[in-house]
Length: 177
Figure (cartoon, rainbow, N blue to C red):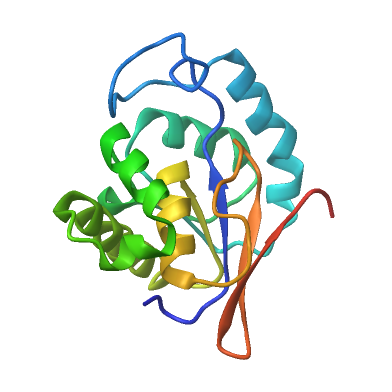
């Protein structure tokens, strides 16, 4: 499971790949103009959070989002390879399985979920309250591992606060402060 420590999560901003303008699997693309605007809009929300470490995927779209949402945060930034997005094939299989993804015989799905578990735990080992900037597949796999009653799919640039209540993970979207 995960280290028991509250944290924040943001999925990267929109890319042309997300809109269907680029067809490909697991490609490393930057944000599009709308994705950059999405990140700029949430920057004041992120600046007001009690974040002490920012952890992020090494993919361009996550790095660019991180740069746009954290310019006022004078905190440690840590790139974590295990926060990289899954392939389209893994996404389709994983999401179709729902909670059964944890017990599937599909090695690629199990491998990705384990990768996410390791990546999130690496992030949560960092000092203080952590912000993770990553991908929709990472968020989905985290939600699968955590269980609970919250949305497993989130849109771009939606800050989410994860916290423990009575040993159960709760996720709450942050719209404004």
